[in-house]
Amino acid sequence: MKSNVNFLALIAALGGFLFGYDTAIISGTIGFVKTQFNLSTVMEGWYVSSALIGTIFGVLVAGIVSDKYGRKNMLIASGLFFAASAIGCTLSTSFDNLVIYRLLGGIGVGVASMLSPLYISEIAPAKNRGKLVALYQLAITLGILFAYFANAYLLSVSTSDSFNTTSGLGHKIFVTEVWRSMLGSEIIPAAVFLLLLLTIPKSPRWLATKGKTVRAKNILLRFMTEDEADNEIKNVEEVLSRKSIGIKSVFSGPFRLAMIIGISLAVLSQLSGINAIIYYGPKILEEGGLQLGEALGSQVLIGLVNVLFTFIALWKVDDIGRKPLLIYGIIGILISLIVVGLLFYFDVNNTYLLMTFILAFLACFSFSFGPVLWVLLSEIYPLKIRGAAMSIATMAVWVGATFIGQMTPWLLENLKPHGTFWLFAAFMVPALFMVIRILPETKGKTLEEIENYWLKRN
Image (tube, rainbow, N blue to C red; front, side):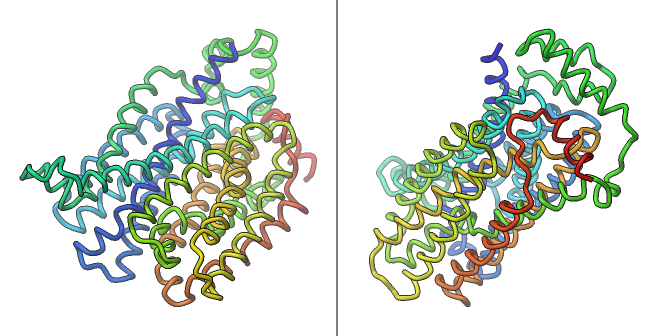
């Protein structure tokens, strides 16, 4: 029974893998695309953030449509967007063309970033829901790592003899315009994701909201006992029997604080600067003294640290809880950002020291904000509007990410690297306050118990 729910969670988490892959693969292409299309700093930011605009649109659509047509169907749609983006970017004939296909990929990221953790939370038993939802963040970090490997490998291929004797489209994709093969490589994980999605059932909680309780119970029986399944259905029916709540009332009713917490932490997680490292890592490391090839190689190390420290969250999120992981992680992020800023400010010419504290920042983010945010967003909202409410909170993630994607080149140019990292550090102060003083602990509680908590608190 247990292995069944784990398998379903792993398949859904592949949406996170594609999210991470799509987000990170662009880092190896920025320099090539900027040179080929003669992009200004502003247009460089647009190239990176264009996908994020698509992401915001994808998130907005996903919440409403998934409440109507189901989580599974929309996950399949996200896989199709990823595949279309990969093929389109490979064959783009102009910069405008490229941006359009990046926008399509962004829509896929937006849909997957909301629905993958949501689907997992709705099939997972309360006792290990945190661990299973955190699989999603692990998948994101693996996607980022594989993207870094792909970039480094394809860059080496472009300078080897493998395609030097060829001509035509193959030579263009793999040698003279290697960024095409980097962006196109996403077709492989997208195809795997689409095939595996055909094997998973629909969300039992979503089915229950549509009155299909028999089907919902049959799915629950795959990974829990009959008594546990009956109890789950009973809890869902109790929640559904309450007076209907509209999304507007959430901002003024008992769930207002949940919305404020979710949106605030979502934005602040991005203002930590995580995507400045993911998107512009090579550029930042070059500022620190590394060559482009070395910078891309160092990003593989960044990806490895990202993956390894996410396992801490998987291991501890259901034991010590969500709040302690966030508190320790944010403190570590704050210290690391301040030190990186100091290294740039005093022009300390030691790339190993710089890498150490960038990796410390990544490590702290990877066991705290990275996985725990998605766990919280998937569990703190009421059932009747969970899709729409999580859509709003997830959109806040991408608004923050879009800001960072668009503004980082400008910040690095005008505030310099030290000012940029200190600005990121400043945003961690209100995040730490919110987690310590306002955020409730949700470990071990069913989704319905969390919903009741907000009602009682009000």
